[in-house]
Length: 369
Image 1 (cartoon, rainbow, N blue to C red):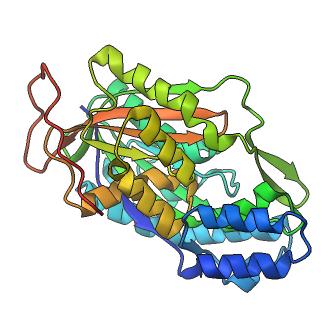
Image 2 (cartoon, helix red, strand yellow; image 1 turned 180 degrees about the vertical axis):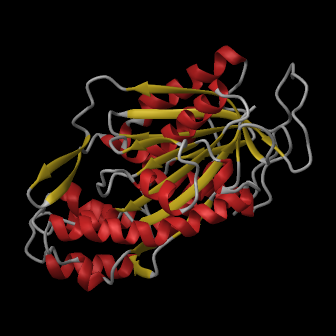
């Protein structure tokens, strides 16, 4: 059975704080009629720090889409190999053991994909399958796990590498002055992540089933307008309320397998904003501490798109992991509105797959972060 192994995470060296973000908003948009609202919304995100690719004075410039996309490619090629090597080490594999590379990114464009560059430059077999995912936004991390799981199920014993590369700061558009865009300027950060899904063996989340759910007629709620100046992020004010529709989908996916989504041992979900986590507590009847890893990612790194769930999963690892055989859920949310959901059990180092269980393992009480 396929196992999602420990992720590797990397963030750029430049940091911007909440205080600096608010100061910039006041300075750059002093005459904006809705500035007080934008400042309040940014403050309510809970994002204290974000990592960005360039110093802030360069981030605020717009030399053109061509220049920005070239920077995306240059920085991706410089930074991705490091996280890939660490992810392979975490899984106790080498590049020669990988049969599929899934590359998730919505903040730059390359063709051939980064997958081809990795195969040519990191000694992956030339027979390695390639699956770039570009248009699922923040949900792409969950989709990458699910497609890797599907692949390892179809090809028993095969291994898949997942790579996420998100440079959200390259999407800054100085002419977009809507409140939603001002909020986005204070919410998103840059990060890279990689993780291996092993077809056999390994420690981590033993993937058992996965599914997708699209909320009808919400295509325009999260989207890009592709213009001469690049990708312009569009965010509808109704997005924070989508958990009212997606939390039931999480429950519906688990119940046919006799899993109670309100009684699991760990929760790794996309932290697009604090309202998402607050509403999941409400609709799933869970204490806030169950989402402490996702909230820590949001607080310390902002919304890092497809990399969020891997950063949160790594925080679970740093905290000692979950008890062996604890049941859990991983969920990414993004444009569509789409949810990509995985259910799995934690397998500790040196422990084999458990016998079929007749009831869920006891759930530990969450501890303060």
